[in-house]
Image (spheres, rainbow, N blue to C red):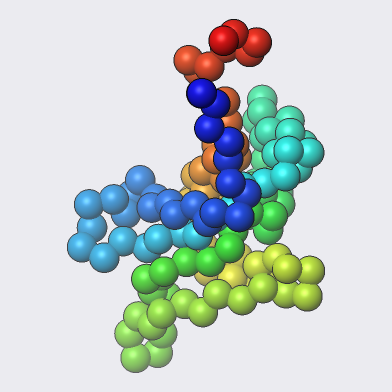
Length: 125
């Protein structure tokens, strides 16, 4: 039996570098619409020259929040506040808080959410 994906279900993701830590940041992601997923997969395949811009576009479309994400503050780390803009996308301030070295991993997790597993064969029953 094929199990369908629920586009309304949030996807909880922990970065590889944060796994095993006492209080990891949990990133809240969403399943992308098929047309956006296809577009972003095309843009991020083969290491195009604007790969990092593609990562940011994927994050804008698929990042829906976080939990336990500390940021540097004047008196020590504080909890980062997540906000959406008028287009229902993360604000620039939110995206700026994400260290650049982790944007690709998060974008990959968003794209992988609707990925066909290798053992699934098209048209087989």
